[in-house]
Image 1 (cartoon, rainbow, N blue to C red):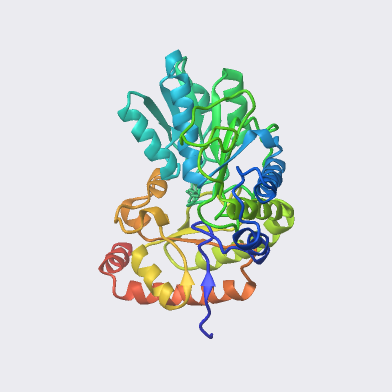
Image 2: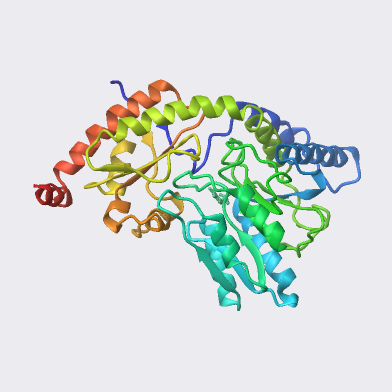
Length: 394
Ligand SMILES: *Cc1c(COP(=O)(O)O)cnc(C)c1O
């Protein structure tokens, strides 16, 4: 088969779509006003920010006054945790509940809070990759300030029982935050129906640009600022608005949430072909449940290969993929998510995440299914670890 370029790392970031780019371009050249200025050029920019805010709100079934633009998903996560903690500290609420397999934007913020006198409960996941809502219920205490459980995991794609967790938090009167960066545009989200109080999202995972995010904060919850300065975002988040990025996020979220069922059907079929094809290799396993999984996520462990070597070989063949998460690449620690699933270190090391999108084609899948087995065979042929595995089998 002829060499192709296949981008299969959409959980790390996505291409800016043509429609998104087109909607953004005028804001670099003609509509470059500062949204705080009083002349028409500025007022128009403000109007277009509000239009984008309306689109984000609609995508979540929230009201526009509940949406604030931020610089990224990480900022939204930081703001949610730190904001709620600071707000509720005077009431003596200094306990946080989260899970072991959150994104580092949550985990590292929680570790920071621990250094500042907060106690954090890290709930486990089961071997299928799900948090048990009853564990949330049992962990809630008098002094719990916030529960933060991600909507869908970025490495193994498992979609959490958010509505149930939200209902428990509502019953117990604890604020519920969800990092929905991977879920937005892939799973129907309704913050009201799903009992969500605060939600983080990011542009670059849904075909908008990097460096733009948003947070939904339910009416009635007022968080202290994370960033101080001017009066932007109704005094809650300072910094001159990134108008092109905000407009692009509006376009992206409108498109991403307009056709979720069709997209899911198409992408799931390709994803299943990928999983079934790769599991034909001996000594492989799918990480995380096949049910309630993001349509585009395939994460498998391949014994006897080392993730980094596999990625380099795939890169030489034009395939962009990931092992563990992009944030931990460069470190040799195996992914905290795979370890939380109960994988042994050496099995977690040989993991491959392929995350496809609706831009992926059947030919791309054919190509991956041709290249990966060939490369795995080459790597195993020179792996002392594989030799040992084979010997032990006999
Ligand atoms: C990518 C990602 C983030 C971080 O978003 P940025 O916009 O890159 O800061 C947070 N949480 C999850 C689950 C993600 O996948």
